[in-house]
Amino acid sequence: MEEQKKEDYEELIESLDTHNVRAVFRNFSEQIYKGVASAANINIIEEINKIVICGMGGSALPGYLLKQYLYDIPIPIFVVEDYDLPSYVDKETLVFAVSYSGNTEETISAYKQAIKSGAKTIAISSGGKLKELCEINKTPLISVIPSYAPRQAYGILFFPMLKVLENSKIIPEENENIKKLLLALKKTNFEDMGRTLANRLLNKTPLIYASSSLGVAAWKWRINLNENTKILAFSNVFPALDHNELNGFDQVIGDYYVIILRDEKESKKLAKRIEATKKLIKEKGVQVTEVGITGDCYLTRLFSAILIGDWATYYLSIMYEKNPYSTPMIDKLKELLR
Image (cartoon, rainbow, N blue to C red):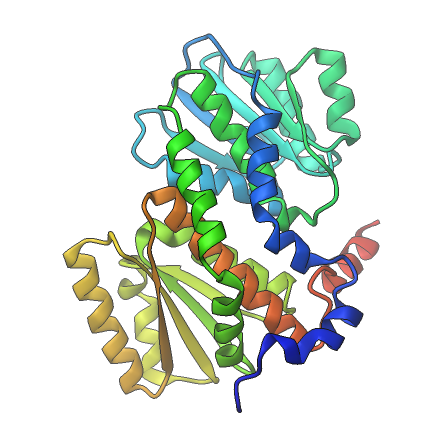
């Protein structure tokens, strides 16, 4: 079909985007400023040998982002999406308990265990039960504004953790990298890039693949396609997907469209593998679009890849005449579990 311009969707956006998700994406820089500011005076002075982020759904995403971004620091980072903490959590562990609502029962359970273990615990929340427990236990609480859907709040949940680690001298200062990201947000039209990709994905089942350094971005695309757009989608990462998923293209059953997120800093070995994989997929009649992710630093490239996906899934939701904020199937599940 002929590619539509964003102006063609203004009436639909006005009726469907009841929570003004478009403004959230257009003003993403505000999340960076507020996220950094919220943790300006929070740090730990004790020695730690591991970091654990507890969170569920959209509140787990910042943990995976932190793990991906800080892949090369000597302290291991773990993300726990469960009621129970692993046995290795102890007094030498820094635990971030992240619940955007403050009422996530799994995170509250993990928080209580972290306190009992003697771990250095910091909570991030907009309020709720977690805030009450922090007041009782005198746990440092990073308060964030409650005006987003959790999956859209990854900036105000990620940057406080980054700032705490910086304040605690666990990582170097991030000011320059943050400045580069903010500059990229001003200079790059992620909205138009996303809208173009949305037109290509219309009436397709998306397969989002990425260089290993952008794996969490591919995952974020998938959950956005599930929650924003209300469609099934799948994601995977090179080189792992070449050892199993690639073979599924031998017998293509379905109308798929592959998006490959390419990091400009990927290795030559990985680049060669991606090119060969792309050739094999196209030979099976599946369309492939590469999205080149560029930027002056890894922070910029990682968030650029995610923001393009935010916009692609936003416009695709509008094309399908779906509210990009609501999650009707999840809401129905919650009613059944009450």
